[in-house]
Length: 457
Image (cartoon, rainbow, N blue to C red; front, side, top):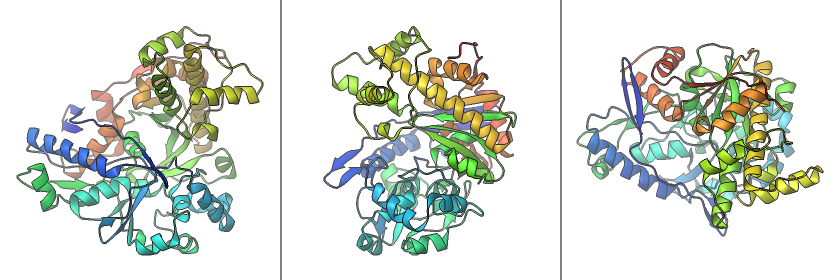
């Protein structure tokens, strides 16, 4: 994505888009990160050619996954967080630190794929051979610059940072027998990682070096920067594969109620805390569509959503956060099984499945937004939906209906805009607080409003 920033200008344009397809080998499910990097280089080459005055580069991605390296060489393609190997790590970690104790240290919701569980599932011999572990955006930045750093917002999802001060938890790391030298120095959004390495400049055809800055490298951290909140009494939903639902707070919330409700305290830009709950998100819908495509059934999303809008909206919802929906595979069959287990009739048509998925997501979003506000002391009056889910009018409307609150949808490219804004501030194109950055988003990307219709279940 190329960003352009000026006094009354904030734009993000796609230079290149490419698939990110996991690969299953004999040892599990992996990301093909070398393929991704090749596509990134191709995209940057186009960007440098079309915009020779490019002022900065920033990298964000999904969280928790990492690559192990030795002397700069990657030891294997990173495991995918949906691979089930981390279940071994859960037992090992919780044998020493039950989740109740971990929550007081790292503030994180229990998710079986968090980095500490993945590292605990590694072969100790491999961990001992490696000399560094880099999260995905840090790995890309390292390949671009030759500088290995770990950005704080993404590091906050590993489970290995102290929530009290945002530093590596040396005691926990030692107890889990994770070699401390694996974890590089931390860096904050807006800080310079380094300039493009000479060999990368050559690959890109760049006439000069370009600085690479840390941003909110966890994509949700960047997305929250660009949520057009103009009042504290708002919740946000960064809606893509996952739905990250929460509020922004100044201090972590470490109560038993927050832990039992499955809330997490993740780092945000400018030292903010993202108190949020991970909802399964559009993954269930997109995986359903993919399954129908493979089976040769009609699978145009727009057509299916139009048909779903005509379906009854009062059908019983299912628990989108059930672990049964985490792995790739046949979602309609799993939905059938969930309903059967609970003695509820399952949908009987494609439109019925889509409507059930949308209604179930909307209910989960509404519940999580209202709970986040209560736990964080934020009297939520508005819910913002950013990311791809902002384009799903049925989902936005039903979230408003089920929450009984207005939903403001957009921008769709919130992650890219948040990334761009942090870079622009870092190189002096703009200045100001997080609120000032968000005001730019409001002026240039006004959201669409969905008022609650009163049609609740």
